[in-house]
Amino acid sequence: MTGSPVPPELYAEVLHFYARQMQALDGGDFAAYAATFTADGTFKHSPALPAAQTRKGIEQALHEFHERFANDPVQRRHYFNHVVLEQQEDGSLRSTAYALVLTTRPGGRPDVGPSCVVNDVIVRESEGLRLKSRAVDHDQELAAVAA
Image (cartoon, rainbow, N blue to C red; front, top):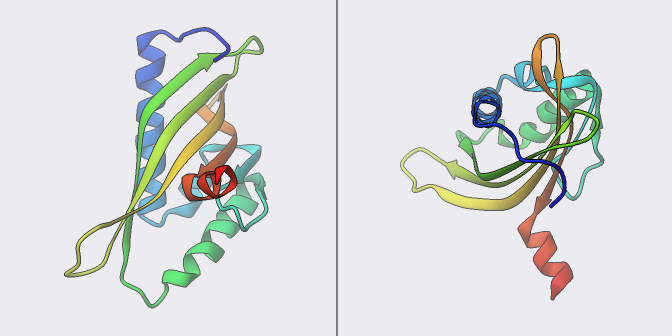
């Protein structure tokens, strides 16, 4: 690990940022989710897809990705934990977190998966914290490479 530890107040601020961001995503408010990125932010969330670029591109990519659930009454919940934050020399924060996605259908039990490592670069803009980049590594992809 590189970088310096962050003060508890900043750690709490990032956790709150993540909570609002995931609630926007899970609620289908893709514009609000995309607004948590810098104007030129990048978002790589699926091994099979290229990284989305810019807020508009991120919003569009999420709409396209979620079209597969159009006729499937599914609720997805993203859970972040074990968040490690490190202050970088340029003032940005490097965040590494574990993420689980729970998928639930009416009358069904939650399915767990995927399990991921989320790698973020966070910056502060006049509006508050924003993601400069997010790259999501899926454990099933990493396990396949290691095997």
